[in-house]
Image: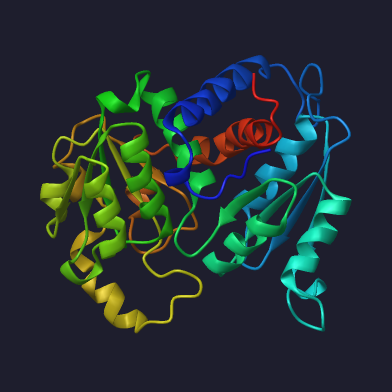
Length: 309
């Protein structure tokens, strides 16, 4: 049994095994229907419990399909349907109940502390479907997508992030260490990654450059990532934040400073940080990026259940 909480805590060799397995599984499903099970149904009889404290489209659907295609089943719970430390039941007791009924627990949460607390008491694997500081399943799938499109290891590519410093970027920074790729970050001065994130990256010899000029950040980029500048639960002056990012919109003019065949990726939902022309343009691979969540999350589940080949 292995948890999947942050990329920082997972050996690089295990992350590579997950991606390698996902590549094989995607190739073998070319002629399958959506709910057809993979050969051998490796997770037959297993139940994945999913709980969402935050809104979700892609994570919810992709994990549902992932466990189904592996032969298992899933039940989705809303946070207000459980005690979760309230009503006289401790979080530890909730964790023990979940461990009794299910084989794995996927949590999308508004609290890093909560997912860490669950990991202490669960006797089944816990998977981080998103937390305030990390979105590991998204970024590992993004690595898969980059290598599929570019047909080479990500370590041989120049990766760029333009936008806010958030949980997705934190995981991308961790991935840059685990997969040894160069990462340029373009963001306004007051929106750079937090010190503890950069300190960890520096201590682990990350190849990261931060630019407060988007044009400099995208120079020589093979792939440009972005995310919504105003998150769903962002408690900030939204008008001011949008104004602060005015010169960081990913549009045709900014893309002209990158390579001609630069790929654009966005984990969705989108906002004003990207123009329609780029988002729907020939260099955008956002729909493939979303689809690939299913394939990679299947291999993450197999990893957590100790079934990865």
